[in-house]
Length: 159
Image: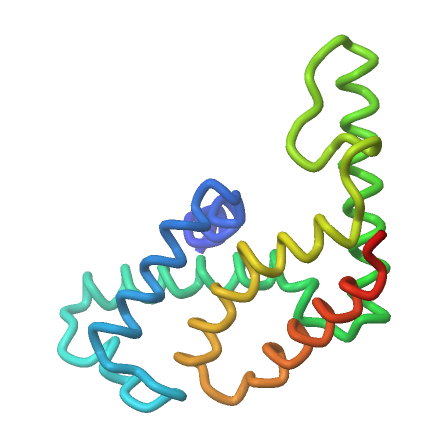
């Protein structure tokens, strides 16, 4: 159990995002999953080792999904978390400047705006991932609706 939990936590590292996204897309395409239909085929006819590996992959993906899920929440909640995350990023950028280092991606408060950063996060990361995920795990359409609404709210806040 400890090993499984550690792997789930490590899977939240964004360096694994593309790999997890492609894994989901391949499962959806290979089993012709549409709105949840055929999703059961993912685990059909797997031996115990393959089934264990597939279960771990999906645990990792679901934990990662939870980690990037702020845009799936109602705007009142999402916007508060976006502010907190961006404050942390900006504090990191301030420290990097203080140390004479270049600012990391999204960490320069002089060039980055919260609305633009969040719209980019939604377009580049969250929307494609959740679009595929909610097609496999049907019944989560409200998450996609929240993502769409939140993007529109941040568009209104653009400077």
